Length: 178
Image (cartoon, rainbow, N blue to C red; front, side, top):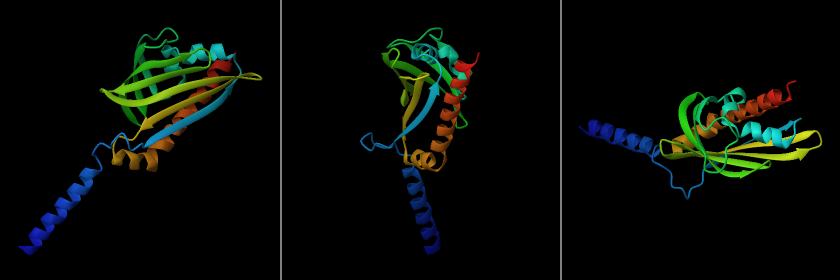
């Protein structure tokens, strides 16, 4: 009987400890990740800006972008939205992006929502360079649970960084192609 009770208590403690990993973290505990990818692109900043802010082009240069629907055929303005089917670090989903900042040709920012929850922010910063544009893509996302934070530290962050770096390299190739 004592052994059974000890086993039940042990299992209950393990279940509680495991459950803690999945409790939503408070917003005050900022476990945000910032992914930054930089790339010089031998094109004027207006050309780069108009291309990257037109969602129709995203699947052509970003490996995580599978398709985009909604207002996709023009450079989006503040308040406009698109829905993107994505595969990030092997995970598929759908995100609704809303433009929250636009300063052509210098800065553009979108906020994402997945199933009504904040999914992250993507910003493009463009600076004139000697032979074109210095393009900077920043993706900021928050760890919603301790489990996500641990997974992010162990594997996810590096995978997302690699995908983002590949994206800006593809963008450069695409825009500099004759």
